[in-house]
Length: 126
Image 1 (cartoon, rainbow, N blue to C red):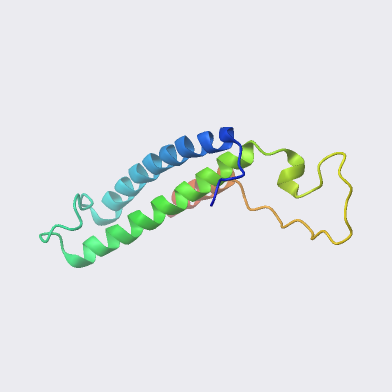
Image 2 (image 1 turned 180 degrees about the vertical axis):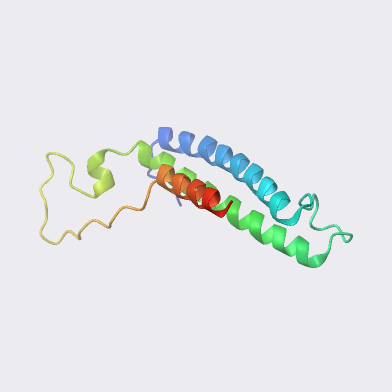
């Protein structure tokens, strides 16, 4: 079960971070949809008056973006509470290194880096 071995502080920080990220991506998607199509995004994609292509495009875009941003935000929030040694996969002070220990995996880019890249790509597109 995910989160079972996590400290409570980490779990309590992940939920608000995911909610804030969801609200932010919702606003960005609404503005982007309006800028690209010139119309408001469908309020209820399940409504039969909304064209099927538009409903499917909005559902895929919105669902994928919200899920991805929530996952990134919760991972970033939990990584803020980890010690440097845990983040790098190094043994804690006082622990002996075992020769069979696998090498740590390279770190993924952080949330601030991804936000900067997104803003720069958006500004270049304009």
